[in-house]
Image (cartoon, rainbow, N blue to C red):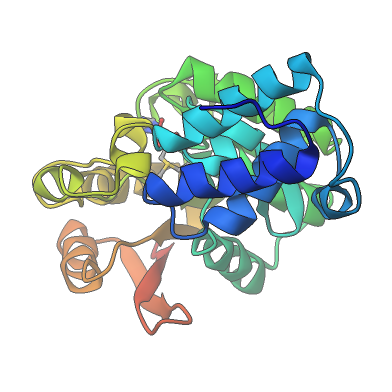
Amino acid sequence: MTADPKTIGMLITWAQRSLGTSGSTNASQEALWLLAYALGMKHHELASWKDRAVSGEELVRAESVISRRMARVPLQYILETQEFCGLDFHVNSSVLIPRPETELLVQEVLREGGFSEGAVLVDVGTGSGCVAVTLATILSGIRIFALDCSGDALTVAKENAERHGVSDKITWKEGDFLDPLRECNLSGTVDAIISNPPYIAEEVWAGLQPEVRDHEPRVALVAGQRGTEFHERLLQDARPFLACGGLLVMELGQGQAPFVRQAAEQVGGYTGIQTIKDEAGIERVMIARRAD
Ligand SMILES: C[S@@+](CC[C@H](N)C(=O)[O-])C[C@H]1O[C@@H](n2cnc3c(N)ncnc32)[C@H](O)[C@@H]1O
């Protein structure tokens, strides 16, 4: 910064210009959100305080958030929050930022579910806990097992469950795929296994936006050469845990539906396999039920 901005109005102009030159496509709005966060205000309040002087401490905080955003750190990691299904989730660089597409996964679980008292649901790859926590806030009388291979992600997910008052409904387990369930005597009893898995192919990952490639956890994004390794493994591992008629509901990447459907048919033991399109017409969610 050449000369220190003396007022909030000058700070806004500086932040918008700085973000604009660093490639942000939404510099005006992002500058307001980031400065509001740094100054502890609501973003609509900034405009009415334009002539207010900026303290040295405020300037340091503002410079810190703007420079992080210029380094392409995702806005949500800086603001430490993302809305999902109408709830605010704490996020940091240990977890994938919840995406709007994943709301369809939750909607389909609710639409297909018909869960009775004592139903057991499993969220595989819970990340921030957005799926498990949202379901726990909506469904009464259920129990959810939320699994992830990342202990740091589980710390964030637990915090989100506390924030939304559903900790008593969720059991957290760290480990690979469904392995942590093996010690829980759940074979043949689970009503629904749900997952938004990593589904980016190795070679696609390198060409992703820096915000995603350089800052979101690789383990939350990449699943082998085709991007379907997680789906394939889950199709194999889920069936023995599901009750007869139990649901497997997985999010899909664009263009993956035909391959994953074929994989489900090859694994066998599933019935009612269907895919649900998102608003963009992409087959986004696959639903299958344990056949017998
Ligand atoms: C795409 S993110 C989904 C996070 C969250 N459910 C959501 O929808 O935003 C996938 C999650 O799967 C976890 N994961 C990746 N590989 C795993 C494995 N082998 N076993 C368990 N969890 C895994 C990652 O740590 C990450 O949190």
